[in-house]
Amino acid sequence: MRHHLLEPHNFSLNISRQTVVLVLLVLVTFPPAWVRQAEAKAEKHLTLQATVDLAIQDNPNLDEILARSEAMAAIPSQVGTLPDPVISFNALNMPTDSFDMSQEAMTQMQFGLTQALPFPGKLALREEASSFAAKAAADNVDEARLRLVQNVKTRWWQIYSLDHALEIVERNRELFRQLIQIASIKYEVGKGLQQDVLLAQLELSKLHDQKIKLIGLRSKIVARLNRLIDRHANIEISLPAQVPTKLPAIADETLLYRKAEKSRPLLRQLRNEVAGAKSLLSLAKKDLYPDFKVGAFYGVRQGDNPPSVGGNRSDFLSVKLSMNLPVFSARKQDKAVAQKSSELQQKIYNQQDTLNGVLMQISEAAADFKRSKEQFLLVESGIIPQARQTVDSMLSGYQVNKVDFLNLIRSQITLLSYENRYWQSLSEANQALARLAAAVGEEKIYE
Image 1 (cartoon, helix red, strand yellow):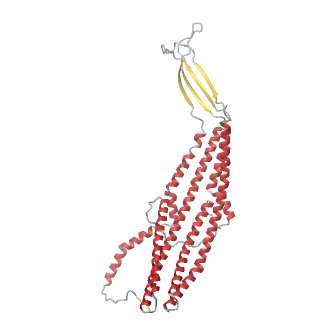
Image 2: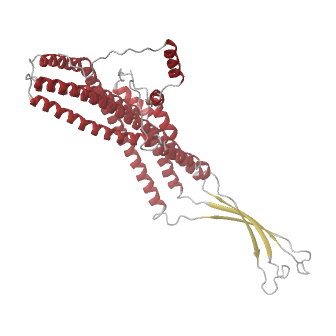
Image 3: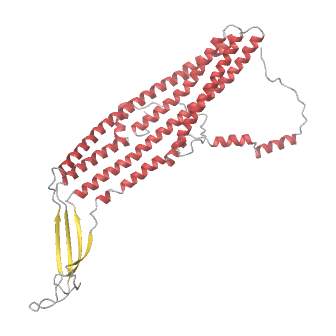
């Protein structure tokens, strides 16, 4: 027995061909509002690559790290250059009773130039240590970019999965409305039970509750993704309805390990930090040697020499050489050497521990991907087709009173669960790929 909410009606309409053509032309030239809205919505779909590009272009945190790196890149030439020379102007031995420049023989106006000279090798070591720090800062920018891309991909795939979950829930709500209608009709004609109607209504309410939760979760993740692409948190994000679902085969873990040791910016950063710590240790050892200051001074005198000597007073030329004495080296320079040595060991240990952590990340991400891929293929090719066949068979059996309503509901709930599992597995597999690419440090992670 088929039941229709709307029965067809026959209408006699007398419309001229010219009127129809005119209406069609108007619709083509000036599409209705709902068509324009649909087209506008379609234009706003954010593909995965477009979202990643937006984040790399506009993310404030990445720009902050980049600015810090650029600032550090300007340091090496500063610390590797000699200190600025000092020019001095002095009035020496000026008599206070007359302030006459010619009264005393030692009165003079002196002009001098002084230059500080660090012990040979110190400037080069300072520049070298700063260069390694600048390289480490640049590697940190690349590492931050990797983390940003991973986070963007993760949020994008989470939203994509939630969109399909909402679509499945809405489709099942419509199905349960139809089941309620079928159960109600069978109950009215005495071929069904009232509890069947109540059970279907309960499941419909549970689906509505699930929809509310999914909408709330989606809004939260949309806010997080908007932050990554530098947009207001409440701006709606629309994703394409369909994307390629074929999952690739990833390379062997041993190969991925080697790629990570070469390509991962974090590991490059730590190598540069270790090299910089070695330079700082060498510089600390150099501080056991003195620094120098050299200067030259020219004194201008006025007046005449005594009659026994005769003539004008000659000017003075003075040369100065000074150095600091590291007499407190046991409490100062030696302690600095011990400090830099310990800092170097700390960075070496941190480098090894971080490498172990990166290899662990690769193994975990690879394992998650393989698991999700296997689940996805199993659900796609096996479970969902079987579940759909079961639901169709149950529905046919229920309509002829050969299957009870509870089993029909259970089979539909099972199908709903595995349809959600299908999209979740696809999303989780792609999130694992994003983590794997970030852990390796490059996108070439496939066979």
